Amino acid sequence: MSLSAILILRLTLRKTTPLLLAALGGLFSERVGIANIALEGMMLTGAFFAVIISYFTQNPWLGVLAGMISGMGMSFLLGVASIKFKANQTVTGAAINIMALGITGFLLETIFEKPGNSPIVPKIEIISLPFIKDIPVWGEIISSHHIFVYTSFALVLILHLFFFKTPLGLHMRSVGEHPMAADTMGINVYKMRYLGVSISGILAGLAGASLALGDLSFFAERMTAGRGYIALAALIFGKWTPLGVLGSTLFFGFADALQESLQGIGKINIPSEFFLIIPFILSLIVLAGFVGRARPPASIGVPYEKEEG
Image (cartoon, rainbow, N blue to C red; front, side, top):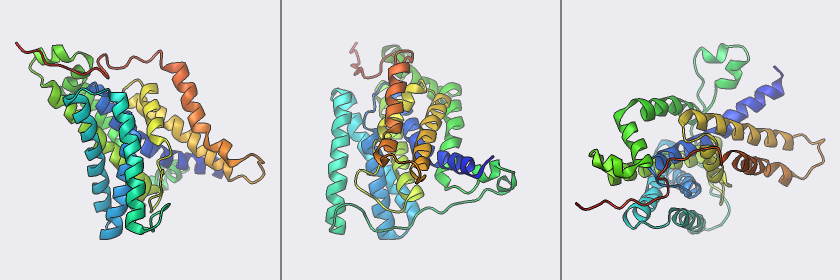
């Protein structure tokens, strides 16, 4: 395998990681019936607070924790609006995205007294897997990444077992498919939905932290650059299953890695903006070609009103 191919595959794993974490977060929310358009805002908020806490404490792990908590905070807004007040989930998610964009931009300028980027902060170090790094070719691709990469891929198997092999996973799926039937079986629909939305925010916040403290070591305005929306497209493309999400995010991660690699080839006389839109064009093609074939949870986006009896 050529050196350039190895580099693209290594970059694919890095590019896939925030998409995979965010999409797995969206999986929790949508499996319990709450449409999560707000993944972009949760990621952006997670990235911002991860950097802020890392800056002031000089501890990137505390930054990661802050990113997860802030993502959960944004998901709480989605949960309260969608579950308690039964607001339109698409509108609520869009509002959260806009709010996250405004809040992070405002706080960035207020704290550092300048817009644009934060200072460089401590980031999560690269780790090298023993024995794996010595495997020819594949060792070069798989080893020497930050912990977020390994965590995201391990979560796929864990969540597959969780959703399809555990009682709690079955309860969450049943709430997303037929909440009234789940209620009659003694499952607390509201509790399951709050739980799913909260975990969704935690994972989306972790996705933002992985972007800010794993791939980079600073926060930039709008740094998620639509990754939350691509993660949502990957969730649909992956048919709301962990393994499907893995395949679809690898596809988008490869597209992103390829466009970045092509930008680095100076002989190609094409504006860089053309390469940047490649992942979004693929998202549109995927949604146009596959969204009709994918069957979402039956009660997604539908508020639940408990019958009094």
